[in-house]
Length: 248
Image (tube, rainbow, N blue to C red; front, top):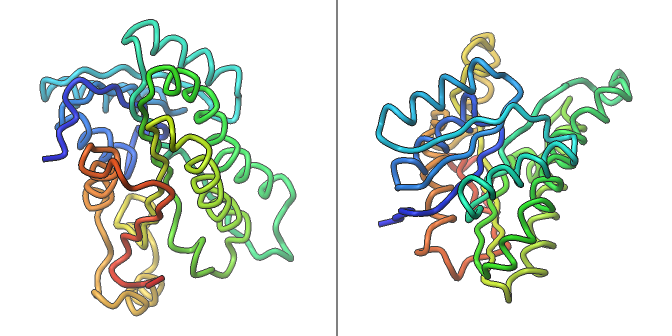
């Protein structure tokens, strides 16, 4: 089930956390993995981890805000492996602050990485997907894009944009056998949340009916389903993986 044998998957922001979990899960399904990230040493660690499990992986230290660099990377992947079947747009950053205190640089940085970066990657892979009449694009959104949150206007705007981008591109390419979907994680246990103060964690948990944070592997499982053949008739969809925190 959810077999990805022979597929080539490009995963952005794949050096740690959710991106790493997605890359490992897709590799376990048989996909060859092209990983991108800005952290070269961590990127190489994940590449070696994937290879140690008998799968194929290549790392690219690329800034997704640079369209030219993204296009060059995709060209290299196409030259090496002949195709890109799956794109997972996971790369993202936060620069949290109240709107009254938010610097314009922090607003722009988050939108450029989270939203422009996803657009750049989609634009780079689409021509080859259209030619082969096959593709699976998966964008990582967020529960806060739907439910809102204090102090994250830039992040929420970028992730709400991701949801809109998902639906727009899904409508454009559906007849080419290309699906475009999103996964919206809730509060996930990662290195970022591990160091939060206890009172902050308690407040977060109080918002989750299941009473616990999710895991990166649970997000990866949802991604693998949506890029598999079993999900071939699903497009323009946002899969909420949040323990009941937001019920659309």
